[in-house]
Image (cartoon, rainbow, N blue to C red):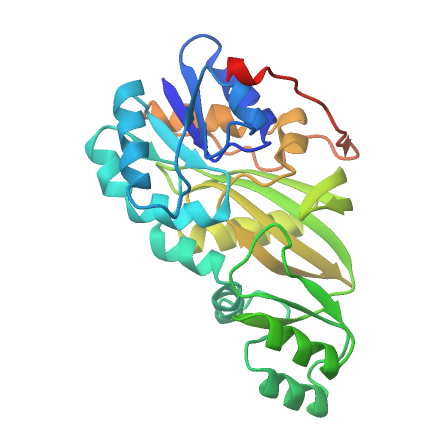
Length: 323
């Protein structure tokens, strides 16, 4: 059983977890466009690849899959998710299973405005969103929404170009500076993250891990504490199964009063996933079972509440001549 982790970057823990679960019964291969991506050095094999935007990138990845007899492949960055889902048939033709949700669903997740409308159509509470700033101004006049609000790219990741704004003047400046922005309601409540696994064979949600976010850094959870809530478990399970998600899902949620609001959905491992794994929510093992043709049993909420995660910095030293 061989696993390929694309765009591994600094996600050393994900690489380490898959190596641990394979325990000598397979290999973890990693790729990145930079040989200064520390996670690749924790893998059994490392490939330096072109940027995902360069022509022929997907052919390079397919060649790696054939050479290394890769059984399953997944990416850790948003821009690559649609590419992987779109090219699924080419991977399947060489015996490699992309661990990703269907293409159109991935596209919806990466387009925050489209996701806002999908949630609304499903009757799931979410923040109000606008791509037309004039419509937003009219909403302010009618009292549908008020400052402060978030201005962010419709398609973006890692919290790049996200701004909390308090006036129309700030909105005008941002819309002049950047294209394809949206205005999103500021949800002043408790923020949660959910690490979710949907079985690739049965389509059933088999794991949900919920953490209250205490501190964020560069768009990722830096400190958090595990929590359990049956109401939120049911909301998430119903949502991911009805939509048809597969594999790993990272969901951002706010609680205002007694109401949970889904904010964003990322069809990949979240940056805070190590918290879930260390609490016993073992998604790498579920991936491996699915790749073996085995369905996973449902263990939603099978972890202890009140367990804290605290990330801290580590250093990797390499000789340039050893790369």
